[in-house]
Length: 324
Image (cartoon, rainbow, N blue to C red; front, side):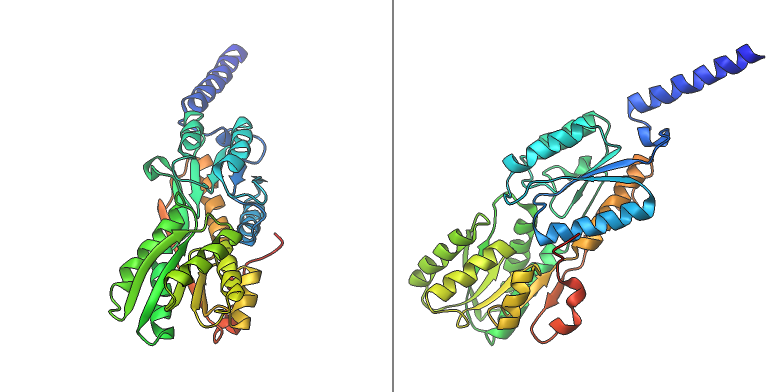
């Protein structure tokens, strides 16, 4: 009798190990300790990602799991992010949440994780081949770009030259925001869309571009800034040439410096995302994946919010955090 029980136990252990090795079952399903979810943001020092970290940590605490949050500080680039990604994957977490700095450059890392049978969820930005992901969550970037066109049309009285200051070429969210803006601006016959340039997410570079841009287009009346770093540079560039307030500027995100610029009248509006909610949802989906549960919905889009000086007093819940 004892021999039969022993053989049965050995068979269960062998079967469990085989299921884990094959990738059919996550190690979390058999682990005695809480599941480990690894989360690598694209820029850990930015208030947007600090807010996302807050949401992720709140959800991890609620689920009783271990969250590892690691990412680059101060530099937004694949070269800065990849060492953190590699270090995380070497720890073989039960699931992996990634905010890619570039859709193509981070694709090999996603494939590596999948080869290790680690389910992958992307938050905010994503990778070139989303079909291999367990799930993804992001803001409504196309809709946000359209909101920017709406506000510029209203602010300019339906007529004027407008421009887009983009961020980085390989960032999926930036591409979608510009797409939404370009599609919507076509519906306003009085707005003349002059094109776009990339700031490379460098405020000093954005300020230089604006100086040159106003020499080329002295009658430019409206600018849509794709992200916060670009917006900071555009504001400074307009201030340097005495055009601050004369050119209407709307920017993405609700970072502390942008909120102050909106209060001062340097910006006419902000398109705020919901990073806390993105962090919560990403961790929940990663946790489900670690336990073999498929997501309710693979592609999740959270609405963005238009904040103006008139309504900002009622929209403070969307301002980004500076501490997790």
